[in-house]
Structures are given as structure tokens and as C-alpha cells.
Amino acid sequence: MPTPTVVTTAPPVIAATPVAAPTPIDLATPADLASRRALANHEQLRALPLSELAQEIARLSALPPAPDTSIDLAMALLLTRNGGEQTRAIGLVEPLAKGVTPDAEAWQPIARLLLARLQELRRLEDLLDRRNQELRDSQREVKQLNEKLEALKAIERSLAPRPISSAPPGAAGSSAPAAATEATSSPRAKATLRKAPS
Image 1 (cartoon, one colour):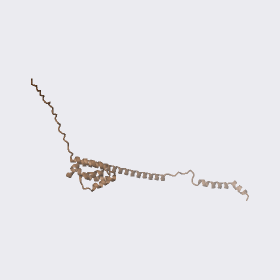
Image 2 (cartoon, one colour; image 1 turned 45 degrees about the vertical axis):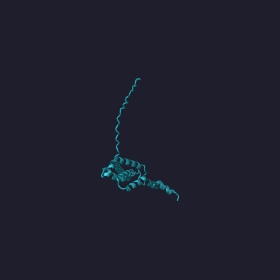
Image 3 (cartoon, helix red, strand yellow; image 1 turned 90 degrees about the horizontal axis):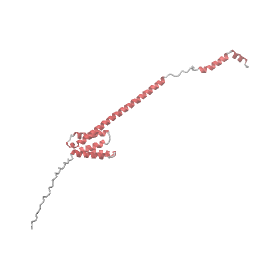
Image 4 (cartoon, helix red, strand yellow; image 1 turned 90 degrees about the vertical axis):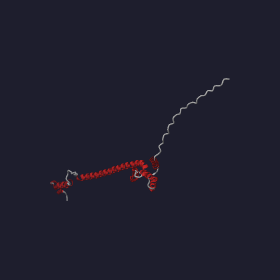
């Protein structure tokens, strides 16, 4: 019997596709974490009514000084819309923006942003105060000018000439006695008086 022929086949060749290198994920820097925390806290502060905002300001003011506390307090003071509180907030964030301490480095970006906002707001409020003062001065000048104008009108009325009548005073009253005297002094009137019965 013939021997069977064994046919062997080679295994299929599978081309290996190159695997892409994983994209490196940037880790959050301390500045990123500080900014995220500050923005999240700002959203919470915005939702507070004024009474609770005042309580939060009092609580933050009682805490020991720290960069995160200073940023939180400055943002709370900014939301009060009070000029004096804004000046206080500038004093809190300005040292952080300049980075005078090593622990303030992470808070510098958000501190610079907040400081620029506070300074611009204070500049606008100072400009508004000057405009309001100029308006008050203008209104006072207008009032003084009106008072002077009324005084001049009163003087003009007092100096105006009075109307003069065509007949002299007392002419109408003296005409009747003169006519009576003329009537009694005529010769006919005298004859009539002599004929009248006694």
C-alpha cells in the first residue's frame, strides 16, 4: 500500500501593529489646585444671601492668616460691593500677587486676577464719586444763579415807573364845589334868592 503523504501548512503570519505610546497626563500643579479651589469657593459665596455672607466674612476674619484664607476672604469682601471692604480685600491679595512668601507661589495666578479686578473696580468707583460730586456742584451753582436771577427780577419790579393818570389828583372832587359857587354867584341866581319867600 502506498504511504500517505502528509501535507504541512505554515501558520499564518499576523502582522503586529505598533501600539501607540500612552499620552502623558499632565498632573495638576499646585497653582491649578489653588485656582480650582478658589473658583469653587467663589461659586459658593455668590449663592449666599447678604446676612450669611456677613457671617462668612466674620468667620474667615477670625481664622489665622493663610494664603487660602486671604483669597477666600478677599472674594467675600468683593461681593459686598462696599468701597471700604474692597480696599481691605486689596490689602489681602496684594502680598500674594507679589509672591513675597514661598507658600504664596501657588496662589499667585488667582491673586493677580483678583487684584486686577479689585483695582479696576476701585478706579471706576472713584470716577463715579468724582462725577457725582461734580453733578452736586453744578446743581448748587444752578440754584445760586436762579436765586440771583429772582433777586434781580424783584429789584427790576421795584424800580419800574408807576402809571400816571391824565387828571390831576383831586380834580374830580373839586369840580362840584366850584360849579355850585359859580351858580350862586350869578345875577340870576341872586335875584331868585331874593324873591324866595322867607
